[in-house]
Amino acid sequence: MAHDFPEISEADGGFAPNGGCAAHAPAHLNAAAVTNGFAPRPLDPGFAWADFAPGDGLNAALHAAANPGGRFFAPASGARGRSLARQLENLSFDGDLPPLDFAVCDGGLAAWSDAERTLRLGRIAAALKPGGILLLGYHAQPGFAAMMPLRDVLHSLTADHESAAAQRVEAAFDWIDAADAADSAFLAQHPAVRRRLAALARRPVETAAAELFGPTLRPFHFAQVETSCRAAGLAFAGSAQLWRNMLDIAVPPAARPLLRGAKNRSVFETLRDALTNPFYRRDVFVKGAALVDEAEFWQLH
Image 1 (cartoon, rainbow, N blue to C red):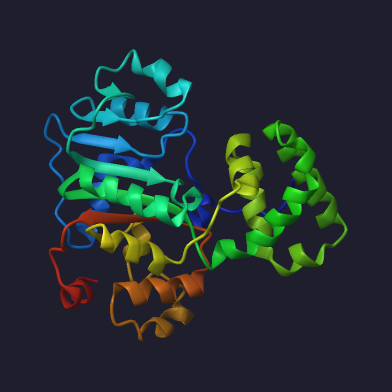
Image 2 (cartoon, rainbow, N blue to C red):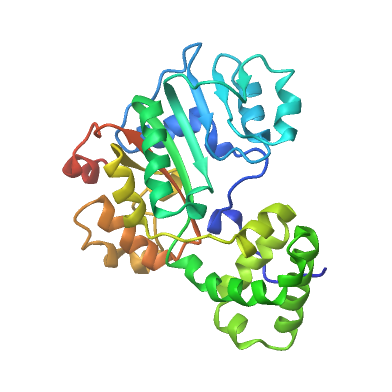
């Protein structure tokens, strides 16, 4: 497969990880919280971290190996991480969870129904200690909305390959390559989709299959996710991509005046998404109230 679409940095879009993700590290989550006026979690021996969308389990295994003083949990992980767990005394895939200092759920949100999302977010919030930190990754509106009609096309095109993810992904990208060479109007008019496909073609086949063919995948506006999290007792702290928390560089200079109408964090994020068109967000939430009020946040930044 050539798949020679234009390059894109993963920082521009993001993917749910299959393997290690540096943004999930306890120290990184603390940095995201502190940047936005929340208290860090102590990293004393025995702190607890859990991955609620662990995939192959390798991500949890890597963080457990890098943080021998913590306890790490990855329920429902795949075999790859479980094979490493035998060498890591601080990693568990089974059993009850203790009260958590950190939790990550990167990529599962878009696949849940409304009722399931409410239930699962409630369970994650209940598992966190007061002040505990959650990273929540999800396919974002408005950026990912342009991928939805293409997903419908590819679903019809590859419907005969239901049982073979690799064959289905191969057929999809071969067709997209041919459509691009034939000057497809859709691809020409949606350059962000072309860039997203270029990055997706370099990811593991499981990631491509989930994003192109996941039967229930649904992108969200930030306000939808923030409302659900607030109902579960989780306060928005900021982005796990730390530079996105720096308001003076959050958007290109010419667009900064368009953010001046933001009266609070939720409005700011909504306006910023309309200007930057993200395909994926990694947001950080904290159980409980912020250490600063809205006025103090704006002064801080």
